Amino acid sequence: MTTVLIIGASKGIGLETVKAALAAGHDVRAFSRSAASIAIENPRLQKIAGDALSKPDIAAALPGADVVIQSLGVASAQELIFGTTLFSKSTELLIEAMAVSGPRRLIAVTGAGAGNSRGRIGFLYDSVMFPLLLQRVYSDKDIAEHSIQKSGLEWTIVRPGGLTNRPVTGRYHVLTDMKDWRGGFISRADVADFLVKQVTDRSLIGATPLLIS
Image (tube, rainbow, N blue to C red; front, side, top):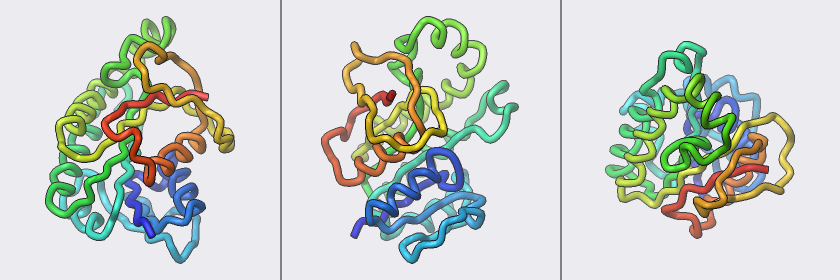
């Protein structure tokens, strides 16, 4: 039985990943400051109230976990406008803690336009939306990606396109080749479906796939 620690588990992709991981038969540790608000009851689900920016909280959640899925998002419009250090700082703390107590497998969600996918999504996104709305946040995601890539962990960085709340379909494109990267949308549930598949699939370790429907 695989134990999956999901960081950022109370909403969005993280919450969908909790559902998908339980459906796949995994034991799940749902880590979030508002973990108690997760409206799921399952004997294989452990709700852990904790802060991704707290070294003691992260260190306490790791022992016994086999895989970590990190799915964090900005909490306010202020962070979107003025930027944040959430992604870089939380990732640095997580990597340090994983080096001490494991596990070695890290699956992290960033987004289309992060890292070397910047400028490869589409004219409107690259020239208008990104510089106006996303550049400050994604600059911090870039730092987080770099930390992961040099961590020595067995990592996969997942870059979903524009997110929707549509139900899971299981039908989406996993673009691993830079020449194929492009814009598109994908449901949070389908991103979660992909993340949970990476728990047992080792073929994309060291890869930065972009996901669109």
